[in-house]
Image (cartoon, rainbow, N blue to C red):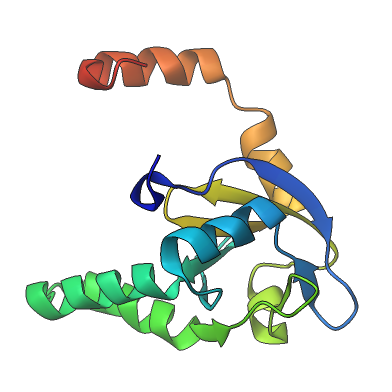
Length: 155
């Protein structure tokens, strides 16, 4: 399978150290190297969690914005927020990233976290927010609803 088909998937539990460093799962670092040939990330907050975009994916997002030039005030408000939280980030030799304090504070990320892969990005959730939102989800109901809405994806 070629590098273009690689995607981030799975979840793992981690602890953020006192200065804000957290390990990125090895399988995610492997995808960054194989698919993107780069371990640099852009971190942004999306209310409940932090999203880490590979530079190439962030660039695609910015290119799309340049072409589309959103005129909707709500979209521009969201973009202003998103860009104001964006931070460049590199993975160190120990496989860790440093999450700046203002990003950690904005999502109440203290110590325990869940790192998940979601197609072309990595999400970092405070453990309690992840459990609150996703560990109690009724997957059967969600599956039934999505299967009827999107029969072509053959869930």
